[in-house]
Length: 127
Image (cartoon, rainbow, N blue to C red; front, top):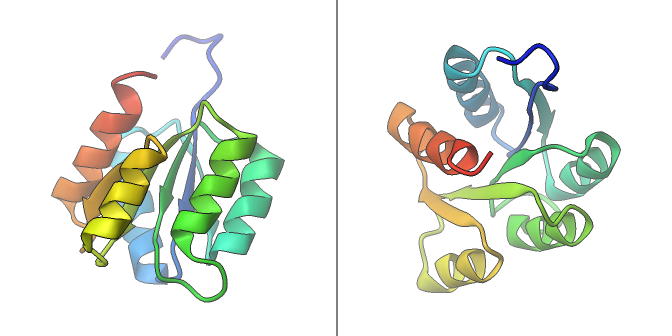
């Protein structure tokens, strides 16, 4: 990594602590310099996104409180350059279409090494 470049920041928003831990562990193997910020719901994700201005975000859809797609839209309004991936077991076409309309990538759960690799490729192809 270029010594003058700031490490990238990834915001992981998921009510599943296990999903957050798996994403964190896998990303750290591939991108050890990245700062990883975790949120357990959409409202917390929005607040942390505003506070930390991450480069990337993974977002679950079904969480307590605000839907992840709603939180994602609010975050993208405030940080339009952010690259966002929706991880969800909710694979209905409406969620996939809404994700695409936001300019984000939809990746079906479960969170696996393969799905995380797909997200990382999306994050880094234009970073």
